[in-house]
Length: 271
Image 1 (cartoon, rainbow, N blue to C red):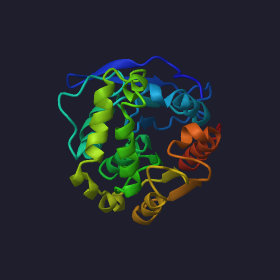
Image 2 (image 1 turned 90 degrees about the horizontal axis):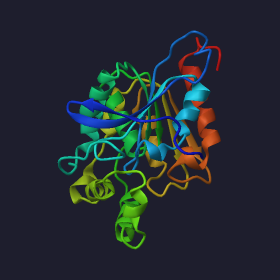
Image 3 (image 1 turned 180 degrees about the horizontal axis):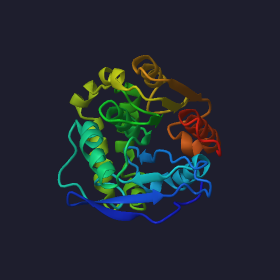
Image 4 (image 1 turned 90 degrees about the vertical axis):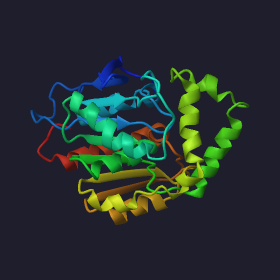
């Protein structure tokens, strides 16, 4: 997959500069004259705008919808965090920070595309705010031992694998990006984190995608979403795929996203 398409900007949200990339629909027809919702991308625990590479621009092209990608505070080129994450960091992002960003960009009822931690945040947001649809990749609705074990191994390999140097290509503060995420997931109290009780409040259509070889979660995550939400849910379990379906099997994910948008907006005829 190619490098990032487009140029991010820094947008001030309550005195905090956030890295934001805005992508146009990339089509002259613009959905046959029917304006659709904006797709907003929520990155994984160690993600950023740049780490999505060109995938959001491909989504904008196949769906003919505007897309917005942003780096959470402390990640990518967004402002550093003033203090460490708390155990409630996913709820705070979904219910406080994301609504402020959407308000500043005048985005109402978005389609949220969340990967891993971003998938959890998308689910939390949709349980409390109007949302047109959810696309969640490798989301977490509860903590599994397979995930914490993988994260503990990453902690042990941080120095031997020189993760800080690798992450510095994507984050202005790579040490914070790593430890802010790693420390919380390995905090004993975080083992009780669970959002299954919120799923019943989600009534928008959901596309949930996960690789069958995901090293950070089992299919129990997707099955729990299907059981708990009240809207239409489509599960996509990908063989021979790990934690990052949009990078490992981009064509299949793009086809699924396009189909999801077609079903969400049957009045649009051009895509």
